[in-house]
Every structure is written in structure tokens, then in C-alpha cells.
Image 1 (cartoon, rainbow, N blue to C red):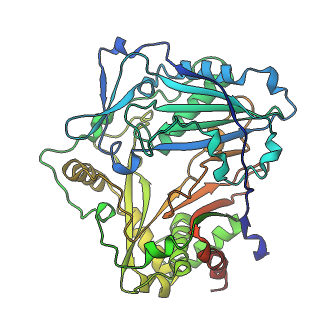
Image 2 (image 1 turned 135 degrees about the horizontal axis):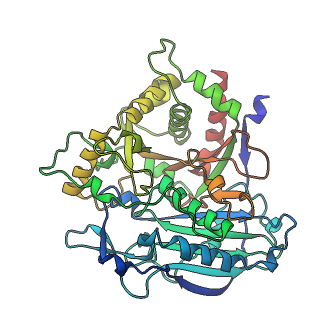
Image 3 (image 1 turned 60 degrees about the horizontal axis):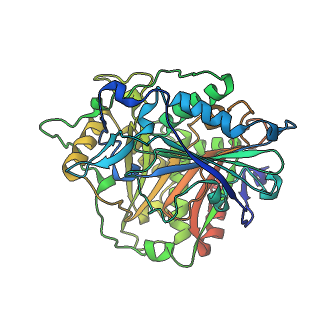
Length: 461
């Protein structure tokens, strides 16, 4: 039975032929100047160096016997996007830097979102397994010619590419600027767009609200925590050398619901002093397996595990309104020596993750805002760090039904540019929900076999 608890998932090497048919700006029916403002404030949570990126996602839809060629999918999505951009008008603007390097949204003529229509002469079946993220899908996401990496200033804040396939299926490749919304906010926007496309009239429930001024820095600033997550740490281990021993490769594993439940039990301390979540257990196991597989040294060097925590429920003064879609994330950070990670029990490491997660409070969030205001980090710090991103908490499949059913796959594409990131994804596909998750991680080839073995070996402890 345990053989089915962990399954390595493969994906084919592809070169998908794509032809761009047209590129159109999408303007809302209600121009922003009617609001008598030309700019919008972004909070320091929106402006963290780690969110100054576009989040690329792709959504595949089979024809399911319907003749989608006879439906103008692109026009339906464009019309719905135009409608939904009325309440979500900030997505029609652009970002610019103010005098101190801080970003804000501004509005001007000829802006709007961007919609690209394309086609491919291959069928969806030619792409192989659509339930496993594949770096070859990158062509399904539109990028400007010679676009700079991580560029967000003066870019459309929503970039959508609709690609039709010869079988009648299609995909939506989407890039949304992270500065305007976190994952939950993106799901709120996506759901409104999908429901509007499905019904043919505007649906925005809950009603979106900006409210970024809730997260203004305090005066005077009160930085009450060390914020290790942002600190520059001198690389005193062989981590970077090990990570780049050869080209990094993306590896994906299906982890069954039974595996996750068993791991959660194994991560529970016998005294029962605290109760683990599945995330605590999974993050702890992945962290120590990653360290062991890479054979990081020296043993007394301290490593960091970072992950985002949704702080919405923690904000009480004042509480957030239901329609808030901005960034309300704090970066939690667990630390441990390599010796403890490789020699400690799963329960000991899970306790570290648990403590970091619960350490995120409203006070921690407001201290983070003040820290960014004072220090304003200019680059991501990767010293001794693994970052885990949890997509399993998002209703991404449910949010992306535009009227043609749930997508076969919904999620990210390619982790290879960031070899210190691990992603937990909900399982996709046409089958009924099984509770399984897909773990995606980027590793040097020399560590791949060992990492896969370690994922399963914990069940024998």
C-alpha cells in the first residue's frame, strides 16, 4: 500500500508551437478619473522585495465534447475581464517608484490590462500529463520581447494569454502582479472574472475594497522583532555549491492523503503539548530531507526555513473587510543548525515550524511593516534558506470555472529559476478530489534520488 503513498511524477520535454494572433489592451467601462485620484497607495506588505514579481499561472480546459472552436473563447474572456475591471479598477493602472523607492499605482491614458490571443496546431493530448507542472508551458504565458526579469514598473498588472489547441481545448496563461494581491486576493479576482464570464453579467462577491491604508507604518516606528527572514546572512556552508552542481531540475511527487495523515501522526510529540497541522509536518519533513539530500555542511551552520502566513484573521485593529484583496502575508522563519535537522526527530523539527507559524501575530505584522519602511530591503536574501509556498489552501480549481467546467490543471509552471523554493499544490486532473497533494521542488540531479528516498523512508521510522 505504501508504494502508492509517494509517486514521482514525470513530464515530457516539449516545444509547443505557438502563433500569436492578436494583442489587445483591455480597459474597464469606468475610467478611473471619475474617482478624482491619479494614484493609489500600496502598503509595505504590497511593496516587499519578495512580492515585486508577477505570479505566472496556467489553466487547461478540455473541450469535453463541446465544440469550443465555435465559441469565441477569447471574446467571452475579454468581455468578462472588461466588466470585472470596473470594481477591480486598480488592475488597469501601472506601478511607479516614488522618491524613496517605494511603489505606488498610478493611472494614465492607454493603460489597462492586456489580453493576448494565440493558437497552437497541436492537441492538448500531445502535451502529455496535464496534471504535472511542466517548464515547457512557459510559451503559454505572454512575456514582452526583451522583457527584463522581475520587471513590474510600468507594466500591465494583468497579462492574459488565451491559447486554443487543435482539439478544441484551450488554456489561459495568466500573469498577475503580486504587488496588488496575495494568493487569496488573486483567487477573489479570478473567481469574479470566472463568474462574470459564466453568467454574462458582472459578479463581484464579495465587493472588492482597496483599504491599503490600514497597513500604514507607525510613527514613530516600532521594530519589535529581529526579522531574521529579511536579514543578510553570510553563506558559511556548502549549500550554494551543492545546489548548482550541474543544472537544477524540477521534480514533482504525488503525496497521498494517507501519507499526509501518517506524517502528521509521526510529527506529533508524545507529550501532546501542541497539535501539529499537516503543513507543520510536511514542511518539517521536506526541510530536513532537502538538507540530507544535499549533504550540507558544516553541522553547526544555521539554516532558515521561510513560508508565508495569511494574517487576515489576526488583524483586529481595525479588522479587514471581506473584500480586501491586497497582500496580508507575513514571512514566518524557522531556524535550526544542520546538526539538529539531520539528527533530530521529525517531531522536533515540526515544533520549530509550528512555533514560527504561530509567532505571526498582528504585532509581528505591524513590526514587519515598520521594518520594511526603515530598511527597505533591495534584494532577496537566499543565504542558508529554503522557502516553502503552500497553494493547497487556495480554491484555485473552483475559482477558475469560466463556464467550461473546472480546469484539468491550475497552478504554476516552472520552479527551475528558483532552486531554493518548494511548492505544495492541490492535485488536479479529471478524477474526483482525493486529498492528495503534489510537491514540486528544484534540485541538482545528484540529489534527486536521495530526496525521493527520504520522502518515503520516514514511514519506516
